[in-house]
Length: 196
Length: 182
Image 1 (tube, each protein chain N blue to C red):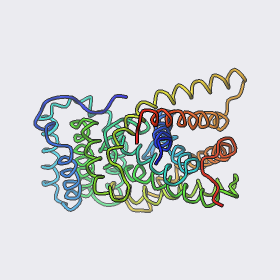
Image 2 (image 1 turned 60 degrees about the horizontal axis):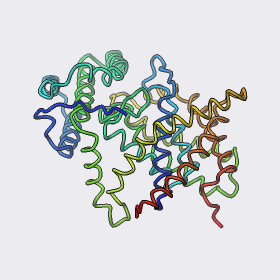
Image 3 (image 1 turned 120 degrees about the horizontal axis):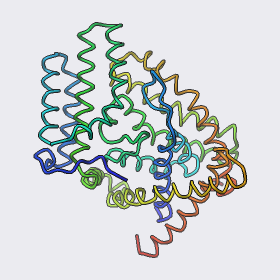
Image 4 (image 1 turned 45 degrees about the vertical axis):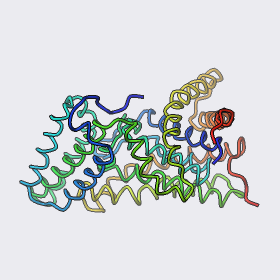
């Protein structure tokens, strides 16, 4: 499983994950309160500048932003038809800036650092029976299980092809039952290794 | 939380990820890709129940936040959350929770019609209720326009509700997870 993280040593990378997320939340709220084109253009330029500082290759950004392109085009078009050009520019800039900034947080922050931040954020919930230290274990387990589930899915599909059945519901049930059986085994293995 | 519960939560989060690899149809004019991922929400809630089901999907969302490309089409990270379709990602665990709570209540008399009703409520209505206003706010379009855009998903969501419900009823017979409440 490849993370979206882009490894480099830059001033943007060294900022702690929690701080980045706070900045993102603050700027995200701020962008919706500002409605002057020069100010939003400045914000967009600053974000693009940060991309340059973080030395992000264009290809790394491309894939995430490409998904947004039809959206952005449609929104800008809708605003042009129903309101006016000024609103269209405002809305387009706002969305682009916010998504680019959010994406920059992901590109410059290690998955492990993000998971640690999530664990820290959950610490106040400890009295409610939440065990934050388990988040890392669960994330690692899930990532490990992804190829296993894929393999199980292939197995079930091959078994059904051999019998000449191909329907998605019939396919799901054996997969789910196998998964639940696997969970029993994994649970026992965790107990045997003394996970409390 | 016993170890077996943790394993189930992690495995269903993984199923949710794998469902995202399934082919998706990108409709022209539709804002978000067609994915099998809401099927993961339905399965987690209706098979694992409220607590474990919701936690499995919360765990999936943690992977998204942490920057792993686990959403359909290999997307992920904060950019998606902040984007127009982020509301649906936020709504996934809530949908699973609603399905789990209702399924646990109906467990004794659980059958296909009940499953269809519960799963459509949690796997479609709840997701729309959160995802559509989010889209309207993020994209700065009227609520009505966001609703008409999302109508494109309805046929797909009906299909996923049917598939998920058939599977949930069959798994309940083969391997019941939610103990019947006396």
